[in-house]
Amino acid sequence: MIRRDLLLGLAVVIAVLIGIGVGAVALSPAEVVRGLLHAGSASAPIVRELRLPRVLLAFLVGGSLGVSGAALQALVRNPLADPYLLGLSGGAGLGAVTAIALSLGGAWGVPLSAFAGAIGAVALVYRLAVVSGRRLDARVLLLAGVVVGAFAGAVMSAIIVLSDAPTLRNAFLWLLGGFGGASWRALGVFAAYGVVPLALLFRMARPLELLALGEETAEYLGADVERTKRVLYLATSLLTAASVATCGIIGFVGLVVPHACRLAWSPLHRRLLPMSFVVGGVFLVLADAAARSVLPPLELPVGVVTAL
Image 1 (cartoon, rainbow, N blue to C red):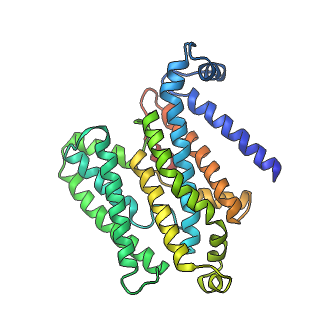
Image 2: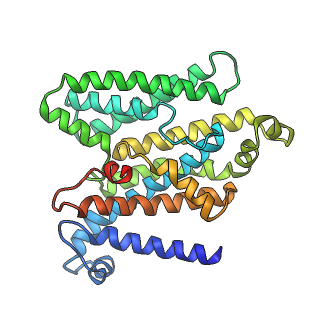
């Protein structure tokens, strides 16, 4: 186990060096280190102002999606669960596409619209899930997520079909995800916003273990099942909404990373959650590096790379 942890730590360092080094202007590991350590070096502007915030943002978003996926798989007790299962991606996509079609304002217009759409979808799914009673039924939650996601997807498709070619291209680029707009400001906003949901999820490790055994068993063992489910749903939804608003819809990470961590480390959530954060971050940093290096100076959407 210690050897695996050391290898993972080494993977983080290698992923950061690769993420900073690749791009339209390739940098060697030595140039990357000099740029990080010496502000006066030739590579410092590229390293510090362009690529370092992008790599850190990709790591945080990948880690957040990994943790959200692990928590949701325990919440709904379904191995196919991922952060976008509950209609959130449809709502975020609808908000973003609407903002693009209407040319809504500035650099923050699309992210804020995507976040608002995601939160609206989350609220609607939750309302549908509890319409038959006060208990949050995981099966109804899944069905409500499918319904809301399908409805939002239909409206979004109609807007795209009725849009002109530049709007169509911009919409598809956003929907496929990317970190072209990464900056220190965007990194700071996401980090400040994500710290509370992440802290909540890490603190829920023991209730997650009990919930994975079944709701009745968890109640017998002293867990407040309904409170646990609501906190998990709120924290994962807010964290995923922030991720989508920051970089678009990036699939696969939240679905597969938790399963890989269960196989490589442990299914126990006190280990699974932090490992999912680190592995998800490493994976998305490398995926972003691949997206920038396949067809330089053009960039593939990161969602294309993760899907492949």
